[in-house]
Amino acid sequence: MNDNIIENKSFDFAVRIVNLYKYLTMQFKEYVLSKQLLRCGTSIGANVSEAQKAQSKPDFISKMNIALKEANESYYWIKLLYKTNYIDKLQFESLQSDINEIISILIKICKTSNLNK
Image (cartoon, rainbow, N blue to C red; front, side, top):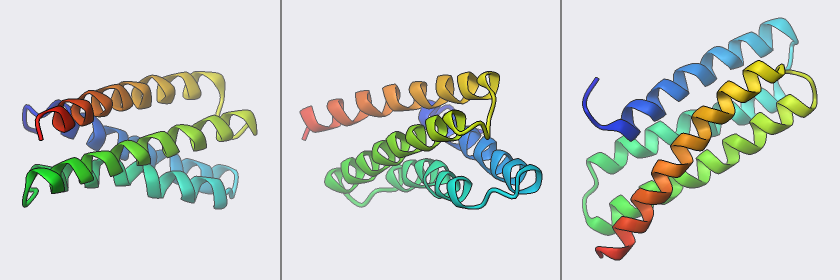
C-alpha cells in the first residue's frame, strides 16, 4: 500500500465490510441490512481512490464529500446491525472505532479542501 492514510484506511475498512457481509449472509442469512452496508462501506474507498485521480479541485472535493456521506451512512448501518443483534458489542465497537476515524479524517480533508478552493 502507499502512504495515503485515508486511502489505506478506507480500503482496509472495505475489506472488513466485505468479510462482515459474508459472515452475515452465511451465519444469519441476512441480506437486506448487510447489502446496504456492503454498498456504502465499500463506496468510501472507491470514492477516495477516484479523488486521488480527480480531474480538478472541484472534482476532488466532490468525491471526498461523497466518501464522507458514504462513511456516515455506513455508521448508521453498523449501529442498526448492532441494535438488531446481528453483530455483538465487540464487533460494533471495533467497526465504530474504524468508521469514526475515517469520518474524522474525511471531515478534515473536506474542510481543508473547501478553504483552499
